[in-house]
Length: 100
Image (cartoon, rainbow, N blue to C red; front, side, top):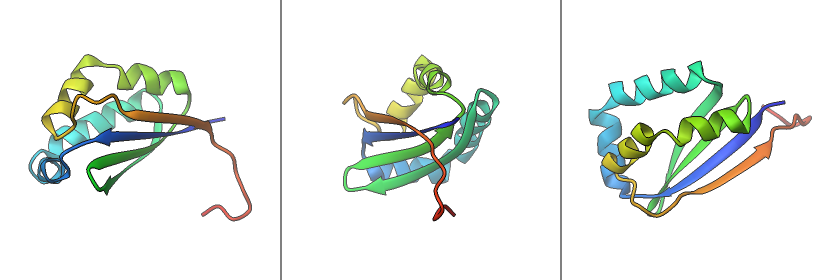
């Protein structure tokens, strides 16, 4: 059974959107690495002063190991993330009749 993970990062969303446009190859490389170590799905959302990451992973441990990488944490700081610890929620993924 997989897990759903949300990560809410306090961020400069304008800097984040600029990084998406200017540093796409770096995002792609990180995404490829994540898939190689257990990531199944990945999306970003932008809110008022925060970036939300919505992922599905094979296991919580795989996510935690990936997200704890110092290089990834440094990257987050260069794309608008601040030093406030993110809100991380991990839940068991379940199927439902209304899933799409």
